[in-house]
Every structure is written in structure tokens, then in C-alpha cells.
Length: 341
Image (cartoon, rainbow, N blue to C red; front, side, top):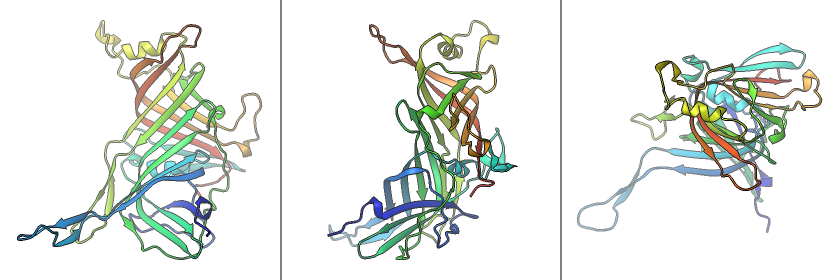
């Protein structure tokens, strides 16, 4: 008997013009891919059943149903930047001749991080005897995590919530065809700068964008009618060879205050305070401008929270780790696509 496997399925997304309105998915499969090697880690839909007991018996008399809530966890290898649009809105694009720059500019207090941008996610599976396509509307990106470790790819996790789903259809599968350009970033394509200086012998780095969104319900509907954002949190860690006391001093500067002028709220210093870059540019050779695939995340107002040492052992390298939080981030992308696909 033939069974359904991941080889018979797909997942894609695209942005909505208004909450829960759905996106325009054509028959040619023009939804966006999250990245390369996508996988659905978790997926649940809950109808918030309410158990109704009654007098004079122990058995339930009936059921009622409350809010429709769904959650989806998608893992993928970083290969394109377009999911940042769920955090910052559509980017501003400029350039020509296949050498384009796309800027997701947050800046403290700008509108791009005040409003939420929703999207529709489609998941299709080709069963041996039929097809099923589920359409999840009004999706909100709760968190986006990016992790880079020695010897591996740059791995991402997207935590998604939704509250509107159409009845499953049996339409023909329409696997995503966008974006047309992609590049699988690995640890070898990443770099980290602190105060505009490359961090020595970086071992790992991760960053998490936590939008803290929520859905708004109203009387008269099981499904949410709108979504909104709460406090936006950007956190992360990195580990590097311990070569000097610079990072330790940044942490101590918040708790050891010999005089008022010595207090450091953030790392401060040279710009950028912290910068994480993924590029297909090799350190020894450069690629043509039309072939550049660069994602640069520049963090503002970086506060180091914790300094830790993995251990000190005979004749073994000593590594230090920093846990940090930032007030804001700007993201600049270079690729050959003129606009957000």
C-alpha cells in the first residue's frame, strides 16, 4: 500500500492585504517558500471545547465550542529574506540591473513595528487516492529564531498562530514557485561584529525576534477578527574564543558603578553595536553584483545580560558566551529580485 510521505506535500505562504482576507495563490503555485529544506515541526488546531455537565447525573449532557485557535511550527534553512516582512512590513526596495537593495527599517518608534502584517499559509498533501489542501488565514508570526553553529546550516524556526481555516479542499497541489533566487546559508557564510569589529573565532550565534502578538475576538464569531502586537523583543546569544576582557567588562559596566559617568545602559561605542551578516561572498573571492545574496541584521541599543564561560580544562580552548537583548534592529538585503516577490 502506498502511504503519504513528505515527498507528497508542500508548505507555502503569502501576505494578506487585510486580516484573514487570504492571499492570492495562483494555480501555478506562486506562494512563497519559507526557505530550503522546510519541515513542519508542530501543527495543532483547537476548537476550545466546553464540557457541559448537568444536575442529577454524572455524565456530560453536551458540548459547546469556543475560540478557534491554531498553531504551526515551521523549520527551514535560511535561503531568502522575505519572512522578515511579517515582522517589519514590506521592505523599501531600490537598485537596478539585478543588483537590488531591500531595507526593513525598524528604527525605534516607526510604524513598521507598530502594526502587524498577516499572511496565509497553505499546506498540501497528495494522498494516494486524493489531494488535500489546508488554507490557514490570518496567520501571525509569533517568533522567528535564527541559529548558526559550526559545521551546520543557518537554521530557522517560525512559530505561527492562526484562527481562521477554510474547509480542506481537494484541489490539485500548487507547490510554491517563489522566490526565484535562493541560497542555502551555512556557518561559513556568517560573521558577527561587535562595535564594528569582527568577534574573534566565533563558534555559534543565534537571534530571536519575539513579536508578542495576540488575536482579537468578538462576540458573534468563533474566529478572531483582528491581530495586534505587544512589546517587541529581540534577544540572542553568541559564543566565541575568550581572548580579552572586553565582553566581560561590558557586563560588569551595568553593575559596577564607581561614579555616575561610568554607567553603561547598553554596549554603546562604535556603530554598529552588534551586526550579524549572512553572505554568499567568499572571504577570498568576490561574486558579481548580480549574484550577491547578503542579509545584514544591525542591532541598536544592545544590552549584555549574562557572561558565561563553558569551562576551563587542561590544553583545551576557553570559550565565553554572551546573552544579550536589543532595543531595535534594521535589516538590509542585497539580491537580484527587484521587489518583494
